[in-house]
Amino acid sequence: SVLLGVITAVLVGMVGFRISSSVLVGALAGTLFAVSPDAIRESAVIGVDVPTTFLCVLAATLALRPAGRLNDLATALVAGLAVSTKYN
Image (tube, rainbow, N blue to C red):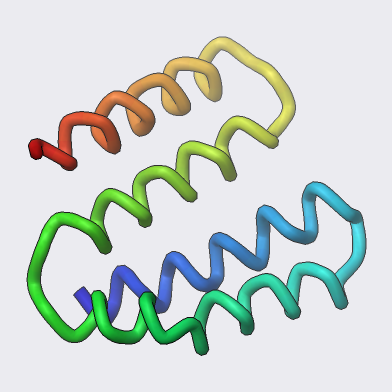
């Protein structure tokens, strides 16, 4: 769960960079997520929230890549996994 939280922080930074084309904005986004009290608290326990957040951010990261048949399929697959991970 902690590992997924760390990877999610990196992905949030990548999304921030892709949206703004600024390394500063990407680093700030990733850092703010990493020090968020909710992210820290949820990473300390095993549950469905951290994997769901990871898969949602991964889907957003994939969606911001250039369009292509394989990328579109991967984005749809990851988005479907994100929805199915949060079962309640």
